[in-house]
Structure formats: structure tokens, C-alpha cells
Image (tube, rainbow over all chains, first blue to last red; front, side, top):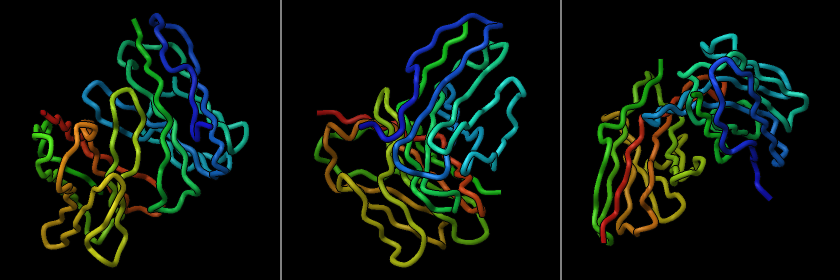
Length: 114
Length: 113
């Protein structure tokens, strides 16, 4: 079983559309994350949830809205997609939100906005 | 604020040769330090991490890293590289109370026969 799974793996969409990426972890972890990796491989945290509560919210446009229905799921909804949103989005989880815990990553969702 | 620098964007080594990937961090105290590997089309996988104690840390796949406080470095090493080690390697640091990890820009490793 995949520990952190996210869907879809590939997504091509037009500017202005709204899209969602789903993420689920079966590790029993309390904390989940969304990271964005740009074309230069730079990886930056976007959001973090601990037991369904938002604990990290980096400077991300309001068009990005995470939702955590339960601690095993963290979905990312993006409104009014722009060309600059093209990137790889990684979902991840860790046992809890304390520093030093190993972060387990999903395989990524490749988003291309045309 | 915490930051991580990986000075080498791309490194090429011959299979069987030794490897050292450089990582420097910026933080007042000793942070948590990590090395992750990303194979093409895959997510990141933890190779090893350092919190405290022995400054030489052993990881998976035969990798090790040495923490040097005086140089603010956490370099990754492997004595003999295999073709399957070709990947992108990321150094990361976390110095905050929350799990807010900052990643370096990565070093792409190419292994030639």
C-alpha cells in the first residue's frame, strides 16, 4: 500500500479553471502538508495541517484553499488557475508537528496550466 | 531565519567513485538537518537526519553525513556510487518549533559508467 497517495498524478488544464488535488495517508500520522516544487526544483511549503487544524500557512494566494475532512486526508483546491501555478505539488505527512519528524512524501501531482 | 545552501547544482561521478554533496545551513543554534533523495518522477525519500549526538550519521543506501558545527555544514557522502544513485539530492533544515522544513535548491547527481 502506498503510504501517501495523491491524485491525479498528471493534470493539464486551461487558465481560469478550478481544479482539485486529493491526498490521503494511511500511516496514521497527525500532520499533513502541501509543498510546491517549481521548474527549478525549488521545494517550498505551502500549508500544514495538524489533526485537521491549519498550523502553517505560507504566503500563498487566496486562490489556493486546502481542506482537511479528517486527519488522513488533505485536499488542495485551486481557483482561477494561472500559468504560474504550473508546478509539481507534493502532499506529505509526518507523525506529528514537532520539529525533526521524518516527512513522508507522495509521488507528486504534475500540474500544467495552458 | 533558517536557510540552506547547496552550492553544487549538478555533479557527475563515475560509477564506483566516491561522492560528497555539500550543504551549508544558516541558523544560530543547531537545527534538525536532513538529506532527502528524489528519483525522476518520484517524491522525496529521507536518506538520513541529524538532531544531536554523534556528528557522523548513517543513512539508508550506504549514505552517511557529517555535521560540522564550526563550518555550518552537513555534507553527504558515499564511498562508492552505484548507477541507481543518479537522482536529485536535497538538504533540508528545520529550526522552528513547528515542522517547517526549509529545503535547499538540490544537487543533481549524474553517474557515468
